Length: 330
Image (tube, rainbow, N blue to C red; front, side, top):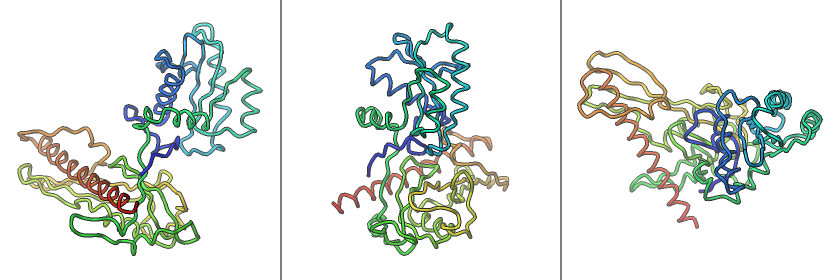
């Protein structure tokens, strides 16, 4: 179980924000204030006019450009230059003297040359800069990085039962090879990231079935007081798309170190009216429980909240089991 300073989702996380672009701004602001020992640096409200963060005392304007893929080649220097030109137009009213670019990737030489030719005196704060600050202020950024847990299937225990599902996942390889390697899996229902051994030849459907065995989430529950039945459906998301169950990991491009999402969707049925509805679980996290449900809406909300607690408890049990397994390994 360890933190990894990967400056991309789902590893980097700012709970207060809903988009990665906003998360990156808040995270940069936090680290810059820590580094300078101040609370003066702030996030500017829209329209930012090419300046996302500002340090009034030092008159430094910061532009934050995030690349969700984490690939240096996906950084768009043209967009950064356009933001600078907007900032230049409003320089007098904002009052900045120095201009800095904050990005979560290491900018390529070609992109850097293009930026420096268009932006005189540009300060570039790239991925290596932020990782160094994370290491320096490790306690302060701990809440902003999801924990990565190594899954050793033979050590997963379910109460008094010791599970061995290596036949499903494949034995953890000593090092990556053509057929056996590890991937990183994130659930839309939980903050932990799991490093799992897989086989390139296994299908997505086989992997999802193995995940169902691992997580043992409640497939269906009926809440008699609310007359609501709730169940889950499961899928695997890679690079923003759901992957067909009959496709192999290899043909889907899911190779060593790939980050995939185990996506669970909730279905609910009103047993009084026998009508089925669907909604992504990720949208249900802020629902409140009601002590005396009466209407269909109130009954539904109460049942979904109870089901959400069941899922959260199951993930917590799994993490505790995996953590215990790591201790026993040591």
